[in-house]
Image (cartoon, rainbow, N blue to C red; front, side, top):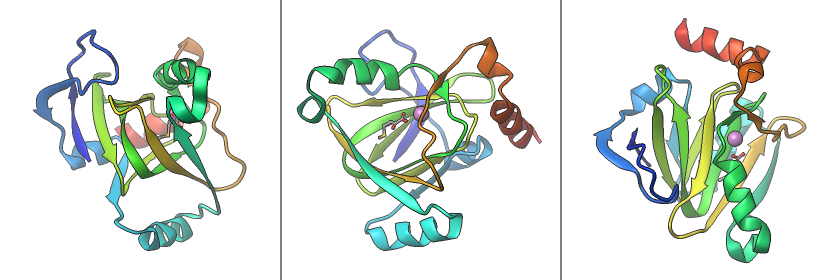
Amino acid sequence: MKAYWYDDSPADQRGPHDSGRPVPTDLLSSLGVLYSHHPTLATVEQLAQERGYKNRDEIAISPETMGDAYDAKLKMFFSEHLHEDEEIRYILEGAGYFDVRSKNDAWVRIRLEKGDLIILPAGIYHRFTTDGGNYIKAMRLFKEEPKWTPLNRTEETDSNQYRAAYLKARNG
Ligand code: KMT
Ligand code: NI
């Protein structure tokens, strides 16, 4: 894992966009973003049990697995959105970037590779992209029914109840 301020250049979303300014893990946790590294599945199982993630599936994102839909999917993942549930991802292969909004609405880019696990809280604005390798395989963990639906950022999501609850928790 590597976290840093996004450079906001118009280059391809899959480039590093590294401003050279690192973001420490405690800034991530102040946003409610939890990171951990798991060389094997054993400690993922433990975390899943503790947090009540009873279900899981796997997603592979690449031109090979998605064919013609890849470009459209990539665009969809990269539109700024929130979910009404946590987004938990354990990276099995490949790499990718999760961008999350900071308190002053700047992008923090989080690079994840094999063995990295991230939990994004419900209500946080974020987006995702593969890197130049165009391949990631991740385990998606969830509690009950998956609520994958991305709600793209609008005035309406600004007043979504999960957004409001997130801001309350984040801002204290
Ligand atoms: C999402 O919901 O944005 C995703 O599933 C991103 C891909 S998981 C590595
Ligand atoms: Ni998402």
